[in-house]
Each structure stands twice: as C-alpha cells, then as structure tokens.
Image 1 (cartoon, rainbow, N blue to C red):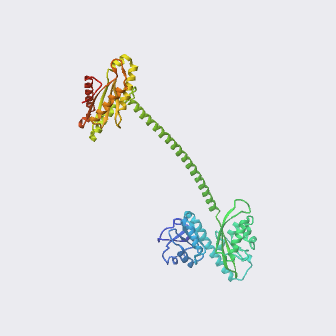
Image 2: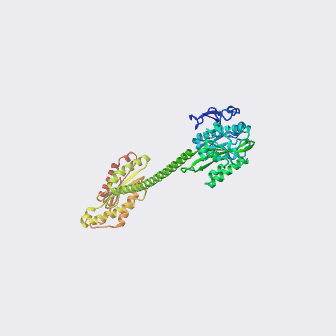
Image 3: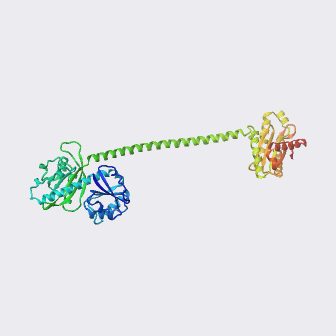
Amino acid sequence: MIPVAYFDTQPGHPCPSLTGNPEFECIALSADESDSVEQIRSRAQVAVVGSAVNDPVPLLTRLAQFDKELPVFVIRRHELRQQLVNRLRFAPGVGKRIRIYDEEEETQLSVEVSAAAKRKTSLAALNRGVDIAAQKPTRAPAQFSFDSLLQQAPVGIVVLSDEMKIMAMNRRSELLLGWSRSRAIGQMVSGRFRDTPSQFKALTKMISDCLKARSGPAQKQFQLKPHHGGSPLELQISIGRLDSLNGSFGCAVFLDDITELVSSKRDLETASVQLEKRITERTRALSEIRKHLEERSHELEKANAELLQTKDELIELSSRDALTGLYNRHYLNTKFPAEGKRMYRHHHPLSALMIDIDHFKQYNDELGHLQGDECLVTIAGIIESVCRRAGDFATRFGGEEFTIVLPEASRAQARQVGELLLARVADAALPHPKHGIVSVSIGGYTAMGGELLDSDKILEAADKALYESKENGRDRLTLA
C-alpha cells in the first residue's frame, strides 16, 4: 500500500478520492497543527492538501523543510487555482514537486498520486544505487547497472550524463522506447522523438534546463510512435537532476505510460461532447415545443377572447328588442330587481315610468303594420333620448308599451324626465289618422325602503298611474 498524508482543517477528515482504494493508506492530519508534518516522517511517500485549507503556503513551507522532493498535490477550487499558482512563484522555501489540482478533476487524483509515489520510490532507489556506484571503482558508462529493485520498477528510468547521453536504463524504459540497452547507451533519449520535431525540441530543452539547474523537476506529456507501427504511446516524462554521478552530475528521466489514462480521458471528453450535443438538441427541441405551445396558447387566448366577445354580443342581442333596439322585457325582469336591491343597500330611491302610445290600435288599423312599426321605432328613439344619466335605461314592455327605469332618481327628477318625454313626442308631431298627432300617456312611481325589494309592485304602481293618465284624457303624466 502507498502511504499518503492527507491534510485538512479537521483531524481525521477522509480523503474522498483515496479512501476505500486498497492501493493507498490514508494518514489524515490537521493542517493547523505544527507537529503534523513530523508525524509523517518516514511514513508518507505523497502529501495531499485538501481544498478546505484556506492558505496552504505555510503548510507547504513546513513540508519543504521535511523533504523538498516530496510530491505534494494541492486541491483548490477552480476559481482559486490561478491565485495560488501566482503566490507560489514568489514564495521562498516551498518544495520542488508541488502540483495544484483542480477540485473538479479530483476523481483522477488517485492515478496521479500513484504515479508520483512510484517515481519517488524509484528516484530514491536510483540515488542509492548511484551513491553505491560512486563508492566503487569507476566503470565504463555502458557497464553502469541498476539493482534488481530498479529493474522491476513500474516506470521507465533512464540516467543521462552531463552531455545528455544515456548512461543506463531499466527494462521498462527499453520496452517503452523500443531500444535495447546495448543500442541506447551513449545515445540521446530525445533522439527517439526526432520524427516529431516539436517534441524533440521540447524534450531536449527540458533536459538541458535540468542539467544547467535552470529549473527544478519538470514534467510534460509526449506522444511516441512505436517502431513496429500501431497506435502511439502517451508518455508522461518527468526529469530530475542528479548531483552525485561518479563525481559529476546528470539527470534522471522517468517514463510513465499513461496511454490508457489519456484514452479514458478522450473517451470521457467524447462522451461529454456527445452529451452536450444531445442536451443542445433536446434544449432546441424543447424550445421549439415551448414556442409552439406559446403560439398555440396565444391563438387559444385570442379565440377565447373572440368567444367571450361573441358571447357578450349574443347576450346583448338577446337582451334587445329586435324592432326598436331598446332593451326587452327579459332584460327588464333581470335588471330591475337587481337595481332595486342595490338601491336598498345604499338607501337611494328608484323611480319607474310606464309609457303607452295613445290610440295606437287605430293608428295601426288605419295606416297598416309597416307604418305602425315606424311609429314604434320613432317613439322608442325619443324615449331613449331622455335617458340621459348613467344607469338610466328604457325597455319595450310589450306592444306599444314602454318602461323607463331611473336609479337614484327622486320623485321630482322622475317628473322632469316624464315631462321632457311628453314635450319631445309633441315636437315630433307624428300625424295620427284620427287624433291629429301621436301622443303618449305616462304613469310613474318612486320607491324607497322596503318597497325596493319588490320590483313587481313598483311596476304595478306605475301602471296604475298610467291608467289614471288615460282615464283623465291621455297625453299627460301621472305620478302615484
């Protein structure tokens, strides 16, 4: 198992990506305790700093005092990642192998931690081998050998001289590079990438900078084409300087095959693109459906408004007398009781006038029904003209009889309306074949209090007053 020190703000807080993985032994430590770094001495091969640690720089400084070559992975939220990168550029005393990891990529952390631990183990073994070799009599570069541990290392390890020439390599590096040791010794490892000039130039610069101590340990991803053809390998190449190499210096090159990891990442990216495409298509389809529904809803609202308008028109038509255009008896029977209740609630009076055209039967018999209809229409127009206040309305009661309803009108106001109607009918001077000109008789009644709740009695009282007008010579107004 690989021991991993996990620092967080709370002691014992588990590492989400590493806990439960049988490859790792998580040592949970508090980032705020000063002796926490001492607790991992000779125990942990890799350190992980959790995203909950607000300021990891002091902890990184303490870790560097313990081991500058210790691989450290700092998990940060995406929006804070670049801020920490900028701080570490100018922070003295921090380690050389710090990797800032995006919190959104934390699921891939186990692969990176495993690779880092293996490289650290291999490098430690390599340095031990180099120290032992330095104590022995100097041998030719081609005879430089690793111990059995390095030969079994899961990553390729290549040792370069200060002239960037290969001095030694393990079996894994032979398999990855496609070179035997006998062929590789004395060659430049970057020469294996000559078929890709950009990669050859980049690797050569990394090695040169390491040998000249221009930079610390470096890491970069390369693509290597096999000699026998087939799919290229994805290699993560790390380089570290060796300062004790047979009295000189050189560098170690670590080759880590990450082909499967890159392939999985590409598959994930492809799946993500396909998923995003499907989401876009679904979103577009939903947008079209929503647009269609909105259009349909607008059409339905418009149709509903037209239906309501038609309904109102039909109600209006059903409430009107077809000949005169006045409201009909049905409207009177509905509206008049409602007005009586309203006047009762507000303690207002309600007046009603009953009107009858004098000698209309003789008029109809002498001049015919068409002339009789014209007379009705003319008188109806005059009746409607005297309904001048809001709320006043006139109806054709039946035949040649009409009514006028005057809400909130007192007895005196009802008299004024009745007298105005008599005057206007006289001014019209419609010829009557037997009685000179057409005239009307009017009876009126004004109700108050409890009488308002019985509309039939109000009309009966007005009709009784109308009878009195006829008995007293017609062409007059009588108020009960």
